[in-house]
Image (tube, rainbow, N blue to C red; front, side, top):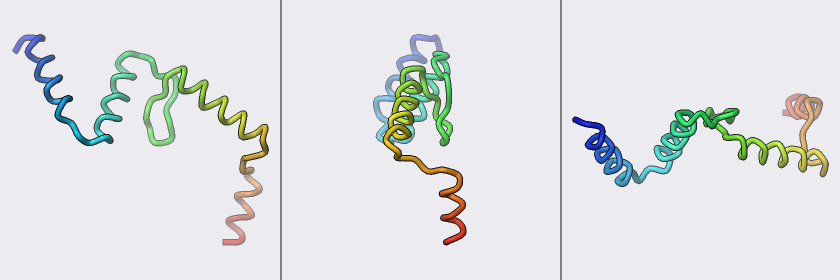
Length: 81
């Protein structure tokens, strides 16, 4: 099978995927193959530079607004649990 036929087969397969989880994994693989990943989420999905910057900005905003949890807060939660 030549490369053109493989591409057509792959496109046909992609067009028929209805599972969003599979699509997210395929997009994650594309990001890795394109070497755009600069970090990974806790669940293992790659994050590109733009997404990473947005995640950092959101974290900075939460911290600035006082919307965060400290280690001490977590330890208290565990003690009270």
